[in-house]
Length: 216
Image (cartoon, rainbow, N blue to C red; front, top):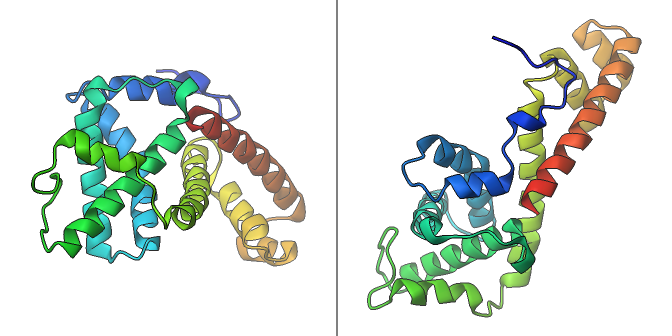
């Protein structure tokens, strides 16, 4: 077995968003669907919560969003010239939140199914409807999208840098703690602090840029 060096750029190990979307056309590709779900469910959940839904309702939106995506994927063809994956997922999530609110208003708590009397194509048409709250929700989406990018980048970095260096970066750079305080807590010297901040910061910036290019 070979190991990727800690400072190597593992492009060959990271599937592009387009290749992953192509895999999702096969509903039997459980690993592809697991990766897709783990990558985006927190994003969908956070946006639903920020839209005012309770925990249980937000979980329903997550479930219904991925059920909807599973129905669409067998015939889905990703074409970046028609829009980014980020924008498409945002619109799908927004439509699932809208559909959930309609169900609640009509006192018809169906789970993962179109409203009574609606065809699937009519449900899909919600994606094209004007939504008076869309601008506010889009701002929430952008904020949560950026947060999701950062979390995913950190997940990837955990395989490439030491836990100590990540802790230093989180405490000193993200947490804003004085460098001497970080050094004392972790029992390291200032040179190690500077090195960790520089290395993790550089790798994190590159990883976020890579993830952004894949999805946007």
